[in-house]
Image 1 (tube, rainbow, N blue to C red):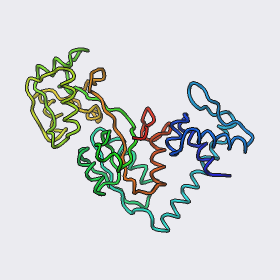
Image 2 (image 1 turned 30 degrees about the horizontal axis):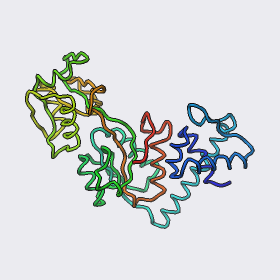
Image 3 (image 1 turned 120 degrees about the vertical axis):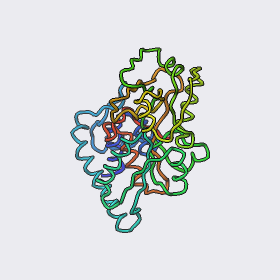
Image 4 (image 1 turned 45 degrees about the vertical axis):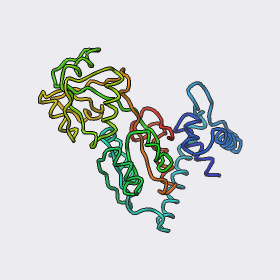
Length: 305
């Protein structure tokens, strides 16, 4: 059996849509359709039906999927083992992340350690600008960071968007913010924010948000650390505009109100990696990011950038 056809079958079953599966496989959608048809002809079975909700497995397709998945997995493990024997795989991977992707980065590293137990993995927190520089210099192999990449780097690393992040208004616990009051609170309170040199992406996002919504804060105070900003908000020193994920671990003294309905309040987060890394790894990571029920909990499949 042609493993290329089985991989197309397994990938389409995971993604549920031809264009997303074709992106994962780095082929065109017509090429994927041709591969699926060829597999169906060889098996004498219909594996998928196409409808408004994408490619749905038939009963026969669902029954064959576990065996096909096992074969594809065994093939990948064989190639990993062969690559290790030929010493083509790096012995270490350096991973960077920003606060908006700390959960996804940690979950990725955990899965990476299970699938590549012989590879040492380090995980460090950096601003997006620093991660870009380290990717280009080779000091970082993988980064979970804000997209899009700067124009001068767009052809160097590969990137896949995996979620949308949104600014939140952080206020002291007990402060009730009614819909429509968010901008007024920013206007009538000191705004606490990061220095530009500590988080240029977030700094410029906040500046664009304030300009787009015609908001002038009462005063602006800067810090070099998001945890310090949260502590200042808790102490009543002002309000802050922070990524929604900054409130995820739980801060009982601070309440976060997402600014979902406001202009310039959202941006894409993505996983970026150096093109020099083994193709086998890069293909697997793209699958992790785009198939349904992948480990990172992303609600929508990513897309190549």
